Image: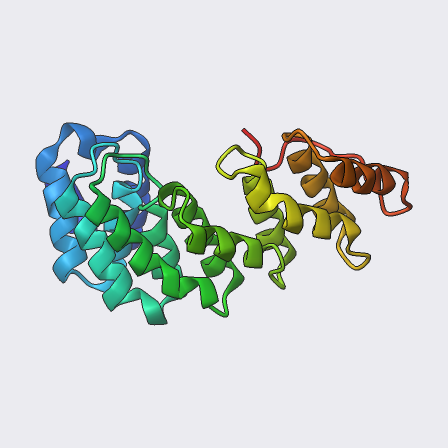
Length: 229
């Protein structure tokens, strides 16, 4: 399997093989396979780095060396390659142990992508940050600002994240209520904000705004559980 991966990496077959290996968690059982993927991240072509990231994305045994290599790719190569940035940040959406210093390095590497012109890159950066920022006030403000992103899919994910238990009510109250009160907001985004608010014990003013939203012409009943645990 290792020889097949080495020969195929960077080719159309390598793309399919790396996805399959990632899905079955092959790198978890074959340390030499994971080591090869790390080497490709360090010295491989752009296509080979993609293959390595696809496979490593399903690896639960992420160690400091592997994570540091992914961060190097993010800093060195991904600033001019949106697809590579997305693939690298997907590898940071892992709840594996990391030291405080490592967490700070992850946040520092991801932050620049919040301002990307590509909405999918912005979304990926926010998804990665949500795994690592904890109660950092600067990060909370980043999410509050992202609730006003120009892309509705970004706004919808951010607002859903605000109702997933990662944030305290006081830190998300204003952006969630502002979403409900925004006459230009899409009904589907407002529906997600409504669901998020239902996760909190609302104060009197918030309850009034919530009730007014339910009675408004823009009210749309939530369908499904987008983004909610």
